[in-house]
Length: 243
Figure 1 (spheres, helix red, strand yellow):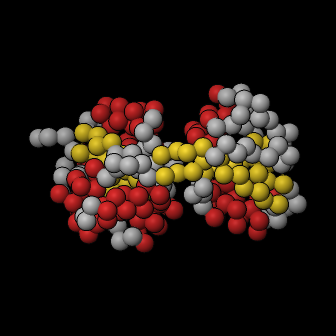
Figure 2: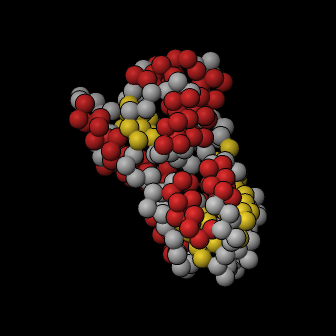
């Protein structure tokens, strides 16, 4: 029996390489299809905030060497926190739930009247900004990088349309949107959506699941923790259980 084919949509850098290695170790055939390209804006977070929020490892990597803040640093999850610590920054707050809603919950009790800096991509969820503002914070957002769909993406959409895809691992709402855009450009959107619904669709969190549902894609699994390794392991375990 051939190994199941599992599509992964990480940016085309060490994250995609490590994802491919992990999936291979788990006994499946990875189909790498980068759906996100990172374009730095050159902007840096403000330094006068009482709380600064970083929402990704990519954002941490784009901090200038001399960037410093006198306030507390908040990370959306452990991978971002590890990146901050690796860069020499102390991490003060990591929410129990690694989502925008989790960050709002973690900061709600201390946010009123405070300056909160949110440094992230141009596709960040409004949940974080709206929630912090509702909690009484003075919120400023800095876009550290923009996310684009790279040329040539769409191999997974073709596989889905042809019925040869066993699973797809979506790590953000934008990966779903870009998958469907790539399918549409090649005239395969309906077939690709149907192919996904015949495959195992695994997503990294509730916002991504909601985007999938809105697009007519059935979600089979939401990772128990919002990190790629958990998503991959749980998806492969589900695939192997169903075989």
